[in-house]
Length: 297
Image 1: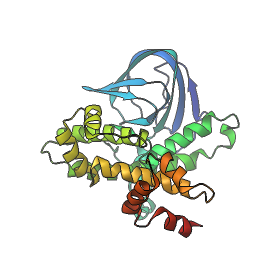
Image 2 (image 1 turned 180 degrees about the horizontal axis):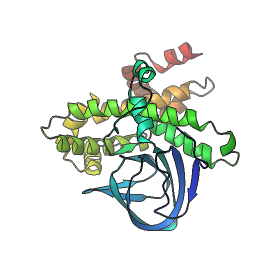
Image 3 (image 1 turned 90 degrees about the vertical axis):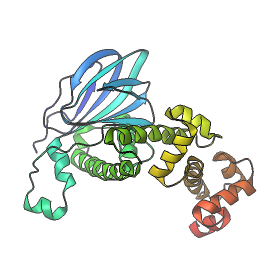
Image 4 (image 1 turned 180 degrees about the vertical axis):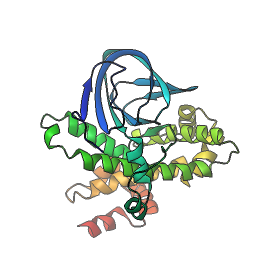
């Protein structure tokens, strides 16, 4: 695939001139827009500051920090918002053929390196923190906005390849999760999965807080009963157990610092006291925090 002269576009208005059939990145800082666009390439739209509002079909997606939106090649969408200060975002555009090639096994790629057919994924809003793809997008945004970033020395091909592979893996996971939702129609399963993802994102954003099932259900736009049931179908655990996992994951990172008291770690991840933290941590990880720390150091 030929490399375009400009891989990174810095824009202050929508719509902008797309680079057809190429991988590239658009960094945006826009105060106001009202535009309808047909997506050229598979687009991953990450919010850095403020909120971008997209409409695809009948669905409205509010992309705010901690979220990213996937839009398929050829999909029409509307983007419209107005803000006092520029809304900052990052959009990665991946050429359909490039992503299609990533979908295939190494053996198939060696036999037929040029992919045919355009892959289509679940065009939904996703939490950034819960997938390698989302975390990769967030790291890319930080890298490109750093004062030392230089496009001339940026290993673009490697980054695009990593993102494409992460996209394929994420969508395989998403498709399996959507299939676990107990509903006959695909559209219903997708809608329920999207609502569960909204609750999931809130848990990851506010994992330190006490989040009742009613609060999560209100955020997701479901009854408490339906959220509990569907969340468990998607993730295999209840929202409460999921939050325990998120807290444990953050605690494991903090426990790597041997000088930090376990009581401080407990409070940092949302537990009122050390015994409660120890019990919850052991339930998730299998060993108490003291044993985990000893094994790490």
